[in-house]
Image (tube, rainbow, N blue to C red; front, side):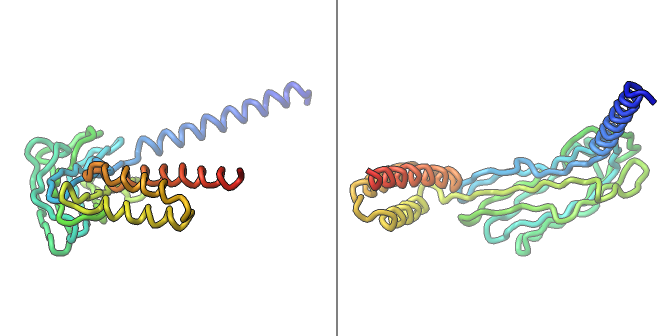
Length: 240
């Protein structure tokens, strides 16, 4: 066999393999069902109310009904209200509606009225309204998701991708989290270089003057940036 013929065969085999892999990936992505809590992360003040939506993208499936179990920290959050979304049409049947604010759990089951065609457009399974109770970082997690397709058969769990949500709860205007953060940063700076008293005082004043409604994430980023500048300045002074 000539070299050119061998090259053509190898090229054809490689193209075939690439096409096959692309088709497999396309089929997998088309059949994957995505269930996500939206928004995935948010910052709230103490005593505020907010809403989490359970969004579902069924892929190629029709969805005739389903059940979700939700878990959250009852010391930080409480559920005020739960209502159906638009995934199962304008007037779905409610099978289970159980909210336990002491345990921090929600069980909710819905079903479509009438026939289900495939694919079902992406939509919201349910909307859940929360109230913040204490300062902290609270996770809201889907501990169980069961969905029935257009033939009333369970959609395989391995074809589901679940994404949860995190809530950062700040103390608000009357809180002391900013002062606590300031004291921690000031102590750390003094441990790094005790001789730079003026620099430490400037950083403390800057952070104390910041609005106390800033989230933990924003405060952490600002503190990290300030620490980096100070440590870099100290290192340059020592080299000099």
